[in-house]
Image (cartoon, rainbow, N blue to C red; front, side, top):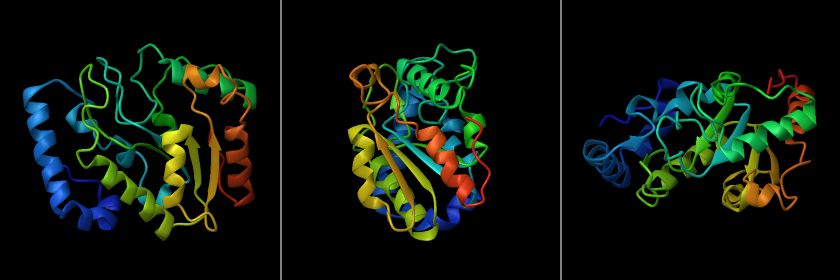
Length: 221
C-alpha cells in the first residue's frame, strides 16, 4: 500500500516515512487491509491531511483511533460519513456547540466542513480492524502522528490545540505553549461528559475568540 501524504505535508514528513518503523507500519497496514475489513477506506486514511494543508492549519483536535463499525470512519477524528447515526461523543460535541454558540444541531456528522476551514482532525492511530478497537495501536502510527504534532509546533505559530481527555492531554508535551494556544477539558464521551468534565468548556467560542484576536477567520462550527 502506498502511504504517500499530500504534497504540503510530504515536504515536512518525508524523512519520517523513510524510517524503518514507517516501512514496517506500511507493510503491516498493507497485510491488514488485504486480510481483513479495515477502516477507514484506503483512500481516506490521510483525509485529515488532504482537507487541511500544513500551512492552513489553524486548529488541531486530537482523537485516539477511528470508529470500527461499518460506514462510520472517514479519516477525520470524531467524524462520520453523511447519513450515519452520530456516535455518543459526537452528539456531545454538537450539544456543547449548541450551548456555547447557540448553533443549530447539524443533520450530518461529517466534519469535513471543519477540516476545509483549517481544523486538523487528527487521530493518533489512523486505521483499525473492523469491530476490533485498538487493533492497530502500537504499530507505528502513534510515533508518526506525534511527529505531525511536533512539526506543527516547531514550524508554525498560534495554532489552537484542543486536547480532550487524558489521552489527548498527554500530547501537550509535544506542543510549545509559548507559541501556541492549548485548550484542555474532559473527553466528550458520555462517561466523562455525564460527570461534568465536558459540558461548559466553551472551547468553540474561546477558539474563535483567539482566532479573531489573531486576525484570522473564525471557524463555522
